[in-house]
Structures are given as C-alpha cells and as structure tokens.
Length: 288
Length: 252
Image (cartoon, rainbow over the protein chains, first blue to last red):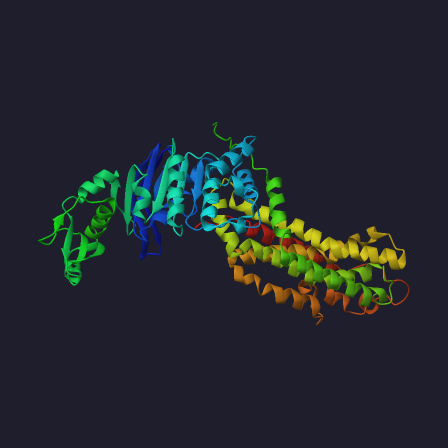
C-alpha cells in the first residue's frame, strides 16, 4: 500500500494549528518511526490516516485513490493500535480476537488467523483467560494481535510502549520488528530507543511540522560535531545549560560527567560520536 | 500465509452474540432484573388481584395498568443498558473498532440491536411472571388477549426511550443520567398529564374509566380515545426517528 500525503493541515479553530503543510510519501516494505515531543501532532496525523479525524486541508491518497473515497479499501488493509485503547474485559482473549476478526470481515481463514496471532504475540497460555485478569503488557499484546488479524498491509502503532516495563518494551519492539515484513509500518513514539533498533526511516515532527525525513544515519550525521562530554565539578552543569542541552549527567569520583548537545560546544569539551537521541535533541533544539 | 479475504460482509449476527453476552454478563443488569421481578410480584399481588375499575384481574384494562406500572422500571433498565454504549470503557474500545470496516451507523445499529435483545429478555420475565400468576390463581390462559395492551402500553414508550437515550448519549453521555429520574417521574406521578406526554399511559389509566370513556353500564369495552392512540403512534415514530438520528455519522 502506498500513501501520498500532500499539504496536510489540521487546525482546531483559527488559532490552534496541530499539523501544517505535511508532505509525505510512504511505501512498503518500510518501518517508519514517527518521533517528536508530546504535542508534536503525531497522534493527530495517525488519527487522520485511519479516518478517525478529518484533515482541515490537504489530501491523502491511498494507492492513488482519495482516502475519503476509499475508506473501506483502507480499513480492509489496516491494522491499528492506538495510543489509548480499551478491550472488552469481560471476554476472553480468544473471544475478543474472534469479535475483532468478525468486524474485520475475515472469512473461513478466521480461526487460523486468530490462532496464528495468539501464537505470534505469546498469548497461547492466556487465550481462554478473561482480559480483565491480564497485565498491562499482556493487554498491549492483545492490542497488537487484533491489529495483525487481517494480515494488514498498513500497520499503524501509536505510542505502544508507554507504561510498559523494560522487559515488556523490548519484547514488544521485537514483536513489531518480526511482523514488519512486506508491510508498511508506522510507529509513533517519543521514546528514541523504540525506533533506534527497528526503523529504517525516521520522520521527526515538532509543532505540527516535519523537521526531518530520512534514515537514522542521516539524522545522526547532522549532529556530528555538536555532541561532546565535559568532565567537571557538579556546579558546572548550570553554566553549560546556558549554551547547550545536557542529555545526561553522570556523577563520578572527581565531580560529574555531562553529555551535551549544542550548536557551538563550549571549549574543553571532548567531542563524541552522536547517538540517535543526541541527534534528535540537536534537531529539536535547532528548531526551537 | 494467504491474505485474509476481507470482502465478506461481517457476520453481524455473530458479533451480536458477543454484544448480548457482554451486556447480559453484568451484575448491574442482574440486579435490575431482580428488582424488576420483585416489583412485578408486588404489582400483581397488590394491584392486579383487585382489577381496574371493577374489571376482572385478567381484563385488558387491568393488564394495561400492570404494564403501565412496570414500564418505568423497564425503561430504567433500558437506559442503563444504553449507558454501556457511552461509558469510558466503550469509548476506549471504539478507538480500535472504528479502524475496522464497520461503519459508525452499523456500530450503533449493532449496539441498539444488542440492547433490544437483552431488553426484550428483561421485559419478558415480568410478563411471563404475570402469565404464571394468571394461570395459577385464575386458571386464565388466553394470553393472546394481552397483545393489544402490550402494543399500546409497553412498546411505544420503550421504543421512544431507546431512541431518546441513544440520541442523548451521542450528544453527551452525562445527558443519560437525568433520563433516569425523568422516566420514574413520568411513570409514577399522575397529575393527569395530557396524552402526548403520558409516556407510560399511567395518567390516562388514573381517570375513572367509566366516566372518562362515557360507559356507565355493563362491561367497559377496550376502546381507547383517538388522542391516546395517536400519541402512541407519535411515540413510536419519534423513537424510530431518534434511533436513526443516533446512528448518524459524525466526524471531527
């Protein structure tokens, strides 16, 4: 499935613009990480893509067809896990997936697909358990299982790891990566670690505008020469923060070690190879 | 693996089975039905046994009175069932459901159908109880005679309440709360409301029937005034109109 977004804008009233002038082309197979701070417009963009919100201006084409005229075409090929979602907790895992499979219009292969998704998400032992007794991570896995039921060409996942413990987060990331083959996966997050290891394309969104669209290496290159480490006394941190962003602060035997990102690094700083998080911070600070 | 064929129209009947299961598998629903049954027992023993306006306990008039008395509590059950469609939990699940090919009108139609199915079950219990009561105490088995009272004193009010509750819920879920005291007020207070506001028919039945219908001698025929019949039709049409309104598409 190919998606073409042109001059997309969304505003609530004349003064609150959430997205403006978004232009994107998305093609499979691709794992696209949509990152940006809270309030950047990531969720709004995703809701527009799944037709839960209407854009104020601009156009979206799905395989060359206007999204408004091809809603069923889109939804038959879509898997969506929203940031905030609920499950019918009185149903068992299998019953809920059966319910969703019926809504998605799965035919004779329904049983096979449900069982496959249960297995993929590691819920085999819990398939006859009522959802209300599951942990947060397990519920999240039920969420991704329902999104995968129709073997979607387009998988949209919004902030899937928020609230998960580190082990569940890693497990969830791996699950997404394993199921990304041949699909177009759009993963929205503000956790850089989530996209670092699995996405081949990054889109950085801030204040409703695209700041960067490319692969992670390109983003890292942009921050080369703008990241360094300073070892100093604990009181030095406040001075550094006037010119730079301190991305980490490590207390050492001799004082403190600051990892800093900035357009012009203060003297005495040892240059470092930027990480994706450094590059992201650099980009955000450069664009206010 | 082959791509699932999503061209099949969703088997809404099987989805409906899950919806009914979810609504019925609920403590709130169980207790409401229990209260309704206890109330029906009380009405049968205290009101029906004496008959209405000198008519037999198994007359259509007495049965109409019985229905007008259990109607408000049934409406409360109906409104509580409608509340489940607009609860925070349901709204959260909707985020997922609306990413499937199920359209918004079909979603609400599905919910309305499930509510109707569960409600019909809830309403049938006090009615069955009344049948058992008539059979046991009066050896009366001609239940077909109660069809007209059921059509006039139960169906219109409940169709109207269903439409009103779903429409109110779509405007704002909190609008459902004032409906609860409203139906109880309309159902249990008899300040001789005119027919167009007499939702359950209890105000009409609170008049002395002979005087009201102008039948001074003999049996009181089961003939209802035109304005009352028209008001029932109006409630049915308004209920259906509100139901259609509730199933509309809304996009922001």
